[in-house]
Image (cartoon, rainbow over all chains, first blue to last red):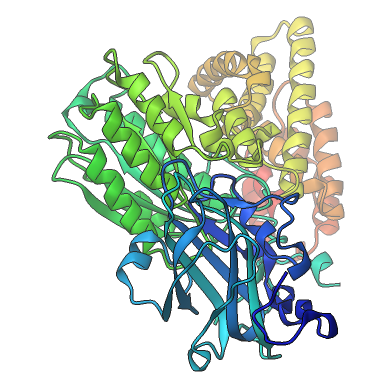
Length: 191
Length: 420
């Protein structure tokens, strides 16, 4: 399908640009108000598979179109643009608000806080649209929270794919240390 | 600074509640959780249909739950709040300090009406501000008073909890009017996502509230089995820890071994008495040996009080105690000598010199089977040989010689010799 670049796709692999999904810490991705717990992990995949729903998709609960997706990264990334593939019949999200580097946001927080950036989304069933970010604000992103507050009138909201374009730095924000808890020392653990 | 923790190696815990002993691994039972417990301290809790009172039974259950959660994972936090009394207020914010939690339960007043909706909102707020955002959020509500809200209102509350990924456990006890179970079931159905929320209905009866809860998913967590819950259930059933002699062989093998040995010795002695009682017709003999056994037996019940297998112990102790009392009325030196004999039996195993002395004392006992051990002391050469075999005793020491002189004819101070 058509990209928004003004060159033709044959001599340029668009998929390579949308490779930031490799840096998403998928086991730790969390969504609030999803109808199937854990289904949010299926929306991070290569660009070619963006329309492929065999692995599942993200769906909100009955009668409630709001969704909140918390995306941690394995290292700090810079995000250039975001692409969302939604569902048909008004189940596509219509508004997206992004927060950076804040853990534990829930719906009341998301509704009250000022987002880093906000977009009006269009129905994007083929994944051809991408939404540019204010790049200077999305420089050292350790985790990204996307709040989809509204949709196009459907009862629920469906999201098939979330694409992220940008660069990964090698910086790790958190020092990952392995700590062993012991109430009583056990020598066999220290061999 | 966020630190990733490997929670695999917690092996042993010192438990605050001395009745329950467990070696648990944090992988079983509860995953990383922050829990808020909502206590119903409304007027309806004064009722006594759960022994001793509804409020007391509830407090016991709360203590048990707090213990279970904190023991299964050291990072779990638990908070407590009231739904009635002076109002909906948080007594302790989610903490892993069990002492704080137990302390706040003291001095709670019972009164007023429970406000379930407000309580759940406050609990949600308290959980939202938990320190470790990685913990799953859970609310445990004890609902003993009637529920005055509609099903619709409860369902909206449930949906809001589900939307924010908060699990809810409900303990339905106390008052049970027509609609309460259905309303609460509807609430749980609205909250439930993937079987994370549970409801337990506890009717009044003989079983304590905590015992009934032990077997429910509220206690056993999501993995369907918790070592803590299993052993706690066993403990509740037997009234003591699940281990023999009340001591876990893994925690203290020497103590467990010593207790087992003394148990067997006691059994052997009891058989010996039975034989002797059958043979001997003399009253004094019977009394003296049973006095010996009564002393040993009295030491045993202290450690075996909770062991159901040894039910015959108390009965024998009574008989032996009676005989001991009768004996103490009569007096008699031979009795105390046998007491010393019993005391030395343990020590003799350790020290070879003492073992030698012990052997001699046993010979003496055989020599003078009935009474009048003082005959032995008339044999000075024998006494001197004994003294020589003891370490640290110089027979030429004047104080020892004086002692020997005073010993002549007094059987009971013999025990002193062997102790020195």
